[in-house]
Image (cartoon, rainbow, N blue to C red; front, side, top):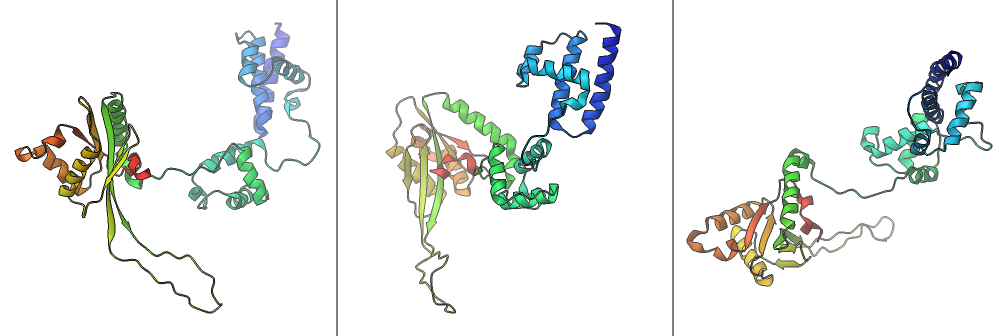
Length: 313
């Protein structure tokens, strides 16, 4: 390449780069980058133009044409020509910013959730662009977003991140041995409550509904077998260490294990669970040999009910 062409290319790159960067046009900046790389190839940098074009989703001919256009008319030729029809309300850069915003917490921007209404208000306040609720709903889909219900975890769970990750790692290792049986346990107290959202009545009247709720509860201690999906439950009268041990024995009667198999029972840190496990560990007078010979207890990390699948059974 002669000196005149070299000087022309480098000067065009310098002046054009400043021009395009100062003008906030995303597509032109992308093309500018590709053209500058093409110039670098012409200057002797070993880059394959075909691979470069494929990486950015363009054909080599397009980059060649943009390069010729820049040499002839400058970097201004990289801008899109006016398209017939209504001008888009939001440019590419604004759409990128909006997608990042919609993926962030709405509370950071003064909203409690992102929907057509909140998006319309935000876009109007941020960009002075008025979009209808339907347009904003369509905008979510065009951005590749969908309304997905997130999993709820306790606010304090983040403080036990290390324990939670170690627990997952430990369960995965236990599951690798087909002779190991993973069982999750938890309890629930079911009460009867009267709930009425509304009813049709005469204007000005004060309707009433009889309530049949009482103070009694149905207590259930459940066991979910991860290997088979089997669910076994026992209705204790109260939740104590003694009734927990009775429920474990009831589970072993309903789910007998074969020779060589071992049950790994995951329980949370409820006070009666901790006491029951301590009693079984001490095994005074061999009272709990039947449980110790078949079960290994695994502690669930604190504030981690989301790691216990029985809650979704």
